[in-house]
Image (tube, rainbow, N blue to C red):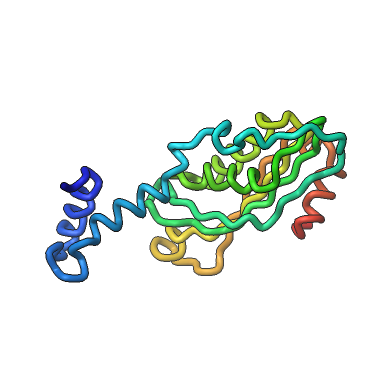
Length: 185
């Protein structure tokens, strides 16, 4: 029994001129469908599910930063990967997020068809929703295979996007401290 997605991958392979019954390709539609489901599993998650009650009362008002969170996503324009890292900072206001949950938020939004600009904003908005901090800062740096493997074929280009909310947007000194701490002066 083949899923609709397996059938579509089989048709795609045939459309490029390959023999889907060839030994190396016999199970490819099944594997590709499974991989595609995994790479887009963020559609089946919610912020509440990802947080899993890991929001805690805290007196801390100092900046919290989790940097170098690796991410893998698919460009919604070409369905090719973009690969990079995300840096998240926030200024608590009575609540903090469990450390691993920040990485899980990044992963939830990265595992969807994306553009990097939207991904960056979604992560910032999710942190804002989760703990209502005084500010949120998110920087994403990624290499896009749609630009490396095709089109202009620029191998060393890195796209950087940022979303600054609250005090990170309003106070240049707060923003500068965050950028300094993540190594992006």
